[in-house]
Amino acid sequence: MPNPEFDAVVVGGGHNGLICAAYLARGGMRTAVLEARATPGGCASTVEAMGARVNICSCDHLPVRTVPLIEELDLAAHGLSYLEVEPGLISSFWDDHPPWALWRDVERTVEGLRRDYPGEVEGYRRLMRASRPVAELIIEMAQTTPGPRSLADVLRRRPLAAARLLAWSRRSARGLLGDFFSHEALIAPAVASGPVVWGLDGTEPGTGLGSLGYVLRHSVGVGRPVGGSGSLPVAVARSFRAEGGVLRCSTRAAAVLVEGGRVRGVRTVDGGGWDGSDGAGAGGAGAVTARVADAEVIATRRVVVACDPRMVALEGKGVPQGFAVEWNKPTPDGYESKIDAVISSLPAYRRLPDGVDQAQAFVPTTMILPSLRNLSENLAASAGGRVGDDPVFLVNVPSALDETMQPSGGGHVFSLESLYTPYELSGGWQGSDEPGRWLRRFAERTLGGFAESIVDWRAMTPPEYEKGFSLPKGHVAAFTGSPLAALLGRPPHLTRYTTPIGGLHMTGGATFPGAGVWGASGRNTAQVILARA
Image (cartoon, rainbow, N blue to C red; front, side):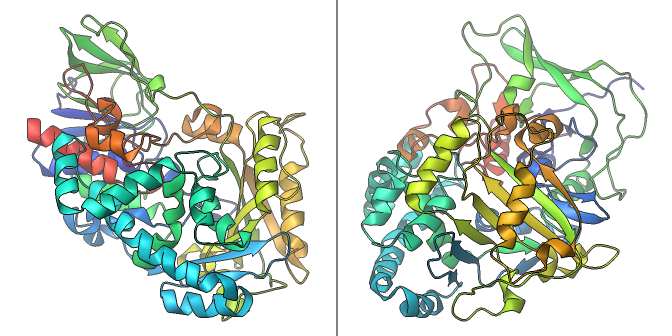
């Protein structure tokens, strides 16, 4: 068949790309999504491995629950449902500080802190009062396209919250949290859920808004899609296809073609056919089944780059001199690693927070954290090609809450994320004892028998993320601009989703409002395009 012509082509089928495409299709545009992998979803995917379903990255969904995607894209009708995670987080420490639990209810959390950290209770309440207006403002900002009008509107309606947001954004996360807490057991978890995930340690100016993790867990709550994190992009893909959208996997976009300063098409390689797969093996509306050549040009007037733009060249006449589609930031060395294991039985922790029993302990994510001093030393160790002696761990058992995640042969799925893991490990990852050491270190936190319960396991290291998900050096790019820059729309390709090339747009975690399972960037980008159509 001749190449179809589309009103818009989205390059990259991660959750932001799919969300953008779904809104465009709902807005009446004939839209195609090109995904290099065999299935869509990117790092939000859930895949088959070891006879079980495992999440590529974290299974906890938080910021995406602030965006009205479920209602607007009718995702419940396409199979998406959430389980609530309670408590929302457990913080544990290598230094044997007492662990503590964050519950959705602030007072329940405070009562748990009162036993082991009585001097921090008032500071926790003060932080909640001070941070809630800032968090609410960020949630509102994330659902609008930044620009001067947005800035004027924010300053008019929320002057105090806006002033606090701008002031906090200039500070370091550790410095800001030090205004409220004296014990590192309250500072370290907030730093770990923000700056550490960005590859920082919270001492850097500009990381202050990373201190909002506590209030967001109280205000929004942590949820997990039934069937794993990948159930979200699967539902979005189904919504997209129900509106006539075309999803094409196993196809890499090699270049965006430009003529006269405007987009005229996309050149692809690795033709996979117009199969419409949503990653769940289900059919649906809008699929085009004809095979196509291994290389082709797809005609379109609009292209949305929803992957790392360094993977897509600009070809043709009229490319503005000096302009390159890029995230504008160097790629850090590494990001994180993740162990997935099938275990025959749940382990038992040696020490539990007040009010949490062993049956609840593996429902939320548990952070196992070093001291603040060792946190900084771990960051330095990663830069030197090593993993710190006391790593930063994020541990959970998705199948403890979600029975659909249990392996077919019985038992449970165990997940351990290790942060500050370098791309270039000293001596190389191949044959290294490093991932196995993490399992042994975790076993130290249990009452015994954990090693014997492991049926099978695998490790995803930064080179594996690079190879499997086109992430240079295994790092997921994140928007690093300040709120003021975002409100002013600077730079436009990261905050207003537009470029100097007519019809070329950008979306994804490196654009406003940021990385993680959020989806606001995809939604905002679609709104910009539809407003200009």
